[in-house]
Image (cartoon, one colour):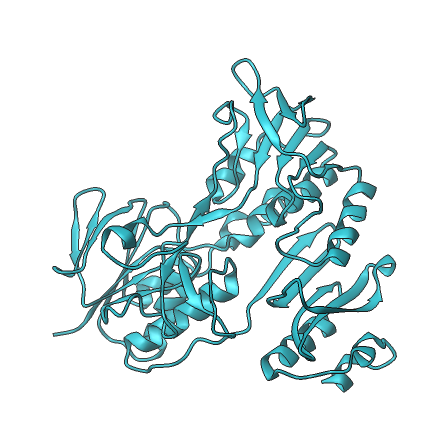
Length: 403
C-alpha cells in the first residue's frame, strides 16, 4: 500500500514540503490542507510591493495550481483542521471530514498578536498577516489620511514607508526606546530612525498605546496620556505560533511546537513540524523559534527528507530581510547583546554593514544596501570564520578578499 502524507498548513513550508517529497521520489499520496482560500503564497511582499500596488496578486503565489496537480497533491483550501488524533492517525477538519495518514507535517504557521487595549475592536483598526488583510488596508490607504501604526518592528516600518510614499500622515508608536529593537543593533536602529523621520514619519518612542478612541470607528489613539487623531490604525506587535492542534494532540509545545534536530516533533515517528510554528534546536545548540522564510523553507526540506528515510541535521544559518523606501536590509545569523560590533562603511552614504563578532568569530551581519557584505557574511558565519575587526572595517579590502 502506498504511504499517505497529510500536510496541515498551506503556506511556505507546506509548498516546499510537496516539492521536496516529490523531488526525493516519494510516490505515495499527499494531501495539503489550508484554512485560507488561496494557494500557498509569499507573505513578505504583502507589507511592501503588494500593499503599494506594484505587485499583482497572482505573483504572490509560490507555485501555480498546475504544480500541485502535476505533483498529484490534493489541495483542500478554505477549511481549518480541528483535531489531530495521533492514536488513530487521523486529521479531522472543521467541516467534519476526516483523513487518515501514515505521516503528518504540521506547517500551521503563525498569526498576529492581538492588542488588548480598550477600543481595539473598533472598525478601522487593522492587522497585516494575509492577503485579505492587505486588501482591506489598501482601500483606506489614501493621501493625507492620518495613519497610526502601533509597533516599530519590520511590519510597522515597512507599512510606514509605503504610507509615507502615498502621502499619508504617519505616526508610529513604539514602547521601546528604539526601532526594531528586538531584531537589529543600535547603529541600524539609529539609521532607520533618521530615514523615517526624514521621510516625514512621526516616531513616538517609549510610548505605549493605552486605548483606541472613536464613535463607531477609530478616530484617535490615546498614548502617553495624550490623544492623537487617526483615520486608520495598523497594529504590528508580533506574531504567535499556531500550536494549539499540536498541544491538544499531546505534543510538547513551548512558544511553538518543540522539535528536535531532525524536525521530528516530540519523538513521534509519524509527526513532523516546520516553520513559524516550531521551536527548534539552533546552530549553537539552544532552543529558539524563528519567524522567517528561510527557516520555513529549510525546515520543510529537512522534515520531508526524514519522511522519505533520508535523515539529516538542521543547522542552517538563519537569514532575514526588510525593504523600506530604497533600502534593503539583509541580516544573517543571530546577534547577542554581548557581541562585539564592527561597522563597515558609512551610514550617511546609505550603504553599510554591521558585523557581530563572538569570541572572535563572525556570528551575525546586518547589511543595508550592501549585498557583498551580506553574502560573504553568511559564508563567514557558516564557516565559523574568525576575522580581525580592523580587516572587516576596512572598506579598501573587498569582501571577496576577506572571505
